[in-house]
Image (cartoon, rainbow, N blue to C red; front, top):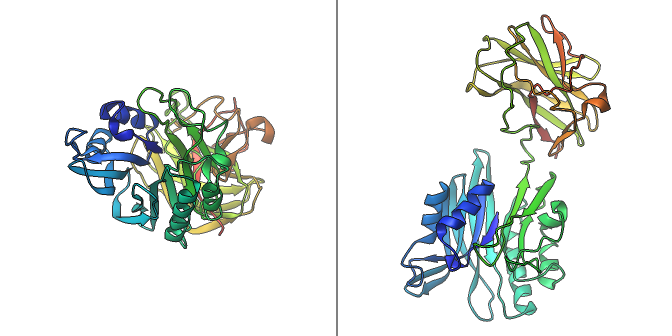
Length: 387
C-alpha cells in the first residue's frame, strides 16, 4: 500500500490505521508523516501507526528540523526491517528525499522498498527527482517503490521512471486509478512501481477511503515469484468432511503458464485426521512424478513437505497434485473449482474445462481421476518459475 496521510491533519491516526488494517497489507509506504512536531501534538506518528496496526516501522525524515520535530516518510512492514537510508533528491524548494528500506521477506530474500514524495514546483523538478530515484535503484531488480509523485501518468517524470520500473496500475489495475483528492478524485498521482524481477501477475486497486485524508491509498498485490502457490494461506469453508471416513487419494488438477519447478507439495488439514500422509505429483495421464511423506505441521492448517529433488514442469501442461488420507475427514468445498482459480503463474482450471476438478480415487493411493460436484480438496504445490 502507498498512502499520503497528510500528517493526520484531516483525521485521527486511529482512523488512518483502520483504513490500513482493512486491507491487511504487508508493506505500507507512508508520506507526510510527522514525528514529534508541535502541530501534531508531539506524537511520533510512525511509531504510533506501527503500534495501532501491529506492524514494524521505520521513519526517514525529509525535513530533519521542522516545527520542533521532523517530517517525512515512513514504512510499516509485517516483515523485519533490516536498514533504512535517507537519500536527498534534487529539490527546487522543500527538500524531497528517497527513503530506501531493506526488508527481509525470508532468510534468502531481502528486498529494497523505496518511498518518496516528489516536489510541487513543476515538471522539471520532478524529472530531476525521478532521475535521482533511478540512480538509487539501479541494479536493484527486486525494488519496490511507493509514493505520491505529484504527477499524472503522462508527465516526463513518470515516463522516465518507467524506463526502469513498471507501473503496477498499468499492469493490474482496473479503471482510472484516480487517488486525489479523496472526496472526488480526478487525478492519478499516487503510484506503486516494481523492479524488473517482479514478473508475476499483479493486481492493483484504489481503496475507497474518502473521509480520512486528501489522498486515497493504492494497494497492489504481488505474488512472490520465487515461491508461488495456488491457495496461499486461504482456508477452506469446510475443513473436515465428516460424512466420509474412507481411505482416499484426493487432489487438484493444475498448470503453469511458464516453465518452472515444484519445490514442495502441500494440503490443508483439519482436525481428526489419522497420522501418516503421502503427497504425490502426477502427470495428467497418471505417471507418478514424485511422492513424499508429510510430517504434521500446525493443525488445523496447511501441511507442507519439500521434495528431495524438485520436479520440472513444462509450461501450459496439466498436472495433478494429491495426497492420501487413510480415514477421510478431508477438506472439501463443493463447487470450489466450478470456476478457474489463478494465482501468479499457476492455474487450477475450472472443472468443466478439464473433465472434472478436483479429483479423487478411493482405496490405497492410486491416481485420482474421478470428480464430484466440482469440489476443491485444497491440495497445492509450491512452485518456482524458471529464471
